[in-house]
Image (cartoon, rainbow, N blue to C red; front, side):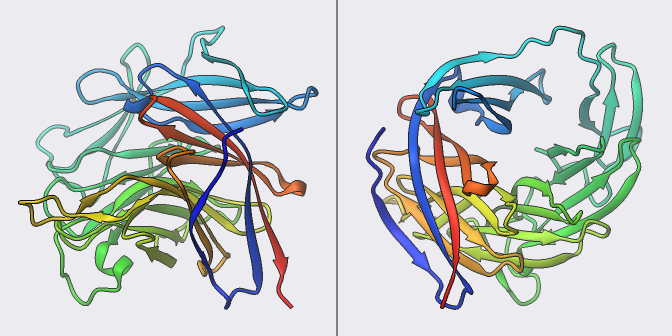
Length: 349
């Protein structure tokens, strides 16, 4: 186990609960071409031996503009050390839909297109509010077969489109998530759309979204997490922050306790000589915890020397013990870093 050093900690006394974050173990394993795409944890099975079998995925390039999903299984022993790490090859043909995004006919909108592996079109759905400059869609498949999609504009804009689509390709809602709302700016002031890194459905059917947000190209990035109404996409609450100066949240989940646990990376602002815009310095991973109303409970930043440069994914593995599994990146060694942690709460007196 590597030594853990905490370099930055924020506690919020207004909270009704005290939140404590403890790292139990931290180990790394090698996955080829890791730095091109981070690993996301899908599920975790506790083994009789005390170890874990972890199912993960990552997006990999497939063609000129498409990304496919590559599945990996990682097994760790009771001490947290990786035992095996391998690509999952399905025993039977995979009949999943293959998604692509492009314009159809004379339309200027981006369409979501679902095809079979034989390239037969199953359905098409126009992504409302998009145009020919929209790209880099973020897609989350839901357990019911539906999809949550983020379609950011390519050029200077202060909003990004959040879409909810059924398993049959029907548009449920679309909502324009704006930089001005996230940063509490008056009017339409700015030139950068929010960078959405994830979309996750909660137990109530609402949607967690988060990532980075900035007013101008020269402004520092803030991290944000917001909760959107599951039927309309309208925001219920949002929380933003700069942590050490620049920050981004890469994933957030709803814990069994009702708390929202988010992971990401932060750094001090660097302005290179001869440039007039801010840039990321050396990245440090962080964990932040919000209550069910979005109120910030704790934000803890970890020293990058002993940990990954960023935390990309988190899953709750043992609710009674308040235990979580976190996946991160070590870009120096090009390895996946797996951490077991407890995130517990105690009622304040």
